[in-house]
Length: 158
Image 1: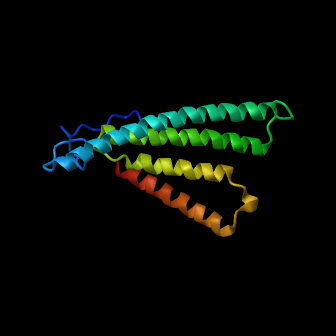
Image 2 (image 1 turned 180 degrees about the horizontal axis):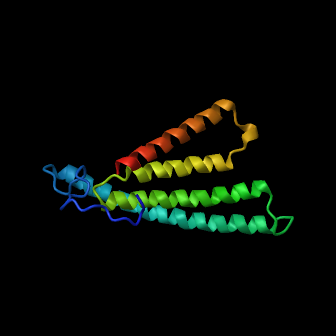
Image 3 (image 1 turned 120 degrees about the vertical axis):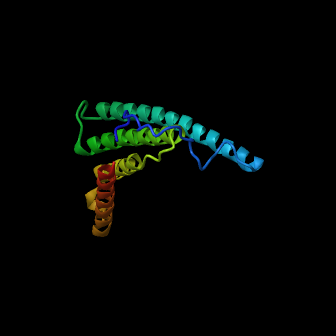
């Protein structure tokens, strides 16, 4: 599911029926309100992390450009730059997950899986193969395969 796609209309839906604004117990009702505000605070904090991440990407690019040899990247520099970019993209995906969590009654399973795939892809991109054991490589491969198959199956269902 693309981020800009509209969710299908299923009539009036309560947002997060598991955190209803109306509950018979006043304490639980207040706790639900607190949790909703906490989630909104997480969204604000994630935006700050994204801004900080973008500034970090700028800093990494600046320092790599000016390091000798000037204006040239080594392969290891490119992996560092890719890693910095991927961290920001993962943060954006997490923000979108939070936004969808706040705004819909639908848990965006495919988006959560795609975010996990992006995170493991970042790990693969910055991985130093010389220092990783065969068991670790097999474990990463199993995670990638499981997430890929799950993403495909959830996509087929949609």
